[in-house]
Image (cartoon, rainbow, N blue to C red):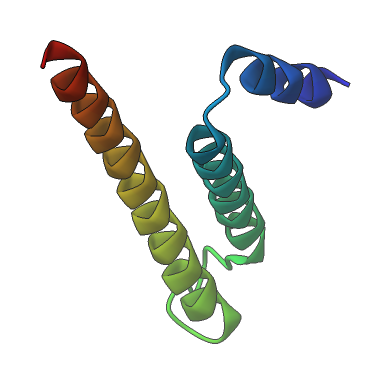
Length: 84
């Protein structure tokens, strides 16, 4: 129930569909990180499915970083456009 309230707050605060889309993608990437952490075998982290899980964690982390950089760049672009 708490997650639904968070989503409704995100969607109410913005009319920007790009911000909503990037928020959803960040949440999906974070969910993938959590899922892949559950797949890790901490005794043998580089063998079998644990290696795949480590790659998945790294890829999802990179996706989160790229999406956050994209959102920051859009915010800077909006500020530059407002100053003109």
